Length: 121
Image (tube, rainbow, N blue to C red):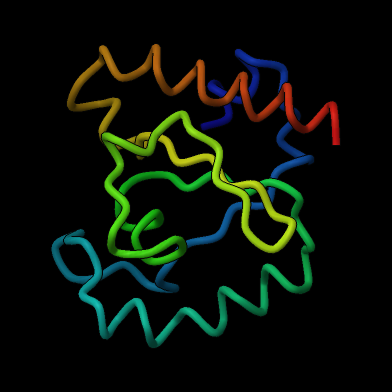
């Protein structure tokens, strides 16, 4: 992530990273719904304390748990969603970039959109 931030001009100290779940499920699998729900209030409190103007949703798990199960990462990535004064940018999870290097171009473009908006709000 740090290399991607540097590539588009985002300073690491300007970024707060949080996860849907606070501990990784066994075998590095995606969290089940009950595991995510158990941690969401903690995440909501983090958001209240940090007061972000922009949240980058890395991958399908983040997207579905934050914006709703009706969202899909392929259709949503690269498109701004604004809710309650916070701008959300869904994009690929970094692990997806390792599996499919062609997604790196989209990912960098999405981060450039984040930088652009951050300079204007």
